[in-house]
Length: 389
Image (tube, one colour):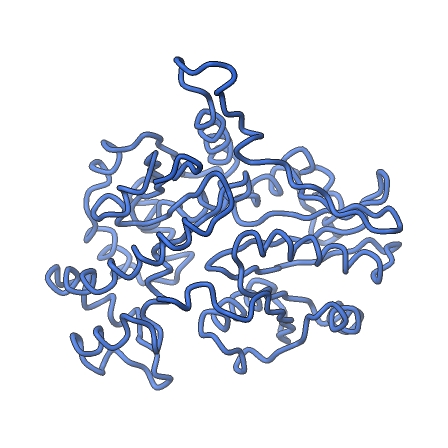
């Protein structure tokens, strides 16, 4: 699409682990677009696909809160190929427009577009390289049941309704095998990432593009007291594991390394002493902070504002509209004044303006394991990024 950007098209059948690979690529410096989740935005009240879907399928697909019931709609279309084709005829042009807009606005040199139907539409024409994530049928069905709470019958229906994985593999430039160990998946993604940046054999040295040029190392944030905040890397896995381990919940470097597929880490340190670790990711234009931990000796008033400022800078570069942060009850009580001064306000989930924000906030509460929701919110933009569509 652009001589200045490399576009990776990422696909694979449901349950293969596409999102895990996309997040790994984002961790390496790519800008990630989840085209499948853009369909959820397109179906929300007031969005372009909302009224056409109701006209086509009837009000029975609408819940009491006026939202389209995606599971109910999915059951219908995955049992009826003609209905699925009609739904895709509504959604695909809108998602294609939104994807193009995000690609054009991205400042990163590598953009990855995750789409389950990548090879069936026009999105593939944007891509310089097609990556396919592969996993066995049994593994994919098990993941849908265990991770997405599908019934076994629904999981099988979704898996069997899709085009054969073999066709996707035939058209792949890169295949990532994701049947088990995330550390092995991470290793494959890293290798493919570095191979992507190798110059063509005919290219001269002066024309070659290095991984560093395509994904520059983020500059750290350094406070007046000398505290430095930077992105954590694979080399920091052992230090992160030791910092986050508790007597009842030990953590290994291998577990941290595997978690790089779901989140990035920001590290705050003074000299060689680690003072704080923040786990986060940007998805669907939302920066989500799942955990913030400080050393007992850390000065929260100095460390937290630096962590959040670095986070916001990176999140803004990734076009995030908002930061949603989950804090446990103790942290929320201790740090509320600091958070408020930094612009983070505790907000009941039911009062959030945007449905997707509410859904992500609920996920953060569920993942945290806390009984009392403590979600802090800070808007990064007044105007929504995809408002034009």
